[in-house]
Image (cartoon, rainbow, N blue to C red; front, side, top):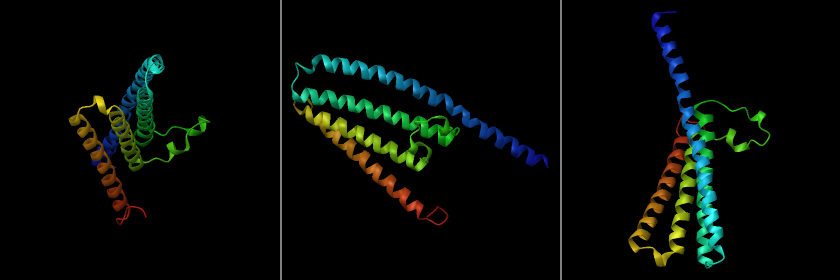
Length: 174
């Protein structure tokens, strides 16, 4: 083996091992999920205290806030597991009886689409909350909610189309 081949193999081993530098990012996201849970508990507590005195739209707005936090938490879980599986190391699903089946099958393209779909859903909830509270929402703010939501939708469509076109290119699978 030549010196160049040995150097190349050493660099490749180093680069391959560097994927573990991502692990603390996923741990930080898991800790962020704990912070989000605390916020969810706080939001639920405030919602429950005022639910009886509030009107129907107040209750719906409170529930939409809880749905928004839940979708955000789900998005974090998707990023943690899919990112770890795709970029760091495989998780042995056999050791976890309740392992969701989709987690072992999601690739980077699927991860991008799930992320953008979640972001669109979160954006839609924010927009719906603004519409439910339209009396207290400035027209300019409402306009920006709509524009941002449409940008997310357009981005999702463009991403899905580019992924679909690239699948049909020679050398890219089907």
